[in-house]
Image 1: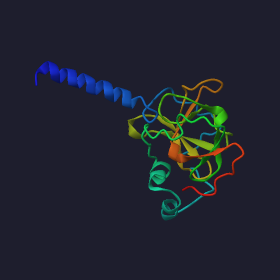
Image 2: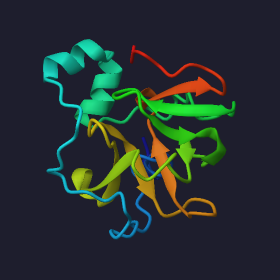
Image 3: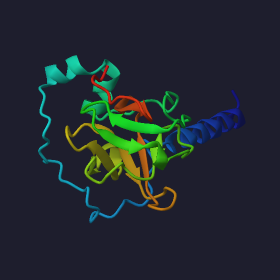
Image 4: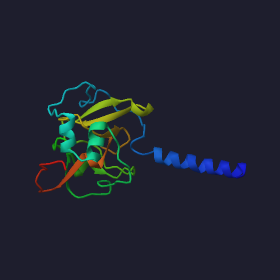
Length: 183
């Protein structure tokens, strides 16, 4: 291979990596204000306490990875990304309501995004310094389970983008019954 071809291939590889890293899991806009009412410490106690074995029995392997091990699903999952039925999104971990379809918007990231939770008590926010970056993690307020991250680059009226993992959410259409199980 010639040096020019190697340079061209490296340029293409770098461009592709830049596109992939601009996703929800790696975005790093300005961090939201820590005076936000939902901010909590990493040591916070949550009402729903299950053992690791109980979480594994309650959740699918993908749900367990995301909710309990702070994983991130592939943007190609898109289960709730381009989905706009009216209803409520519940936590897969605690089954509590988290987000309304009223606040859902297309962020272009590949993950379902909302500009506000259903109420300020539904989620807790924690500073997340993992993966060499500073972000704000969003967790379920009842179980402390990882849902995604929030950024200050969303639409009005809040300017926030709650970028959530689809596996962390259970959608219930308007008039539907709340979920009774995670799986």
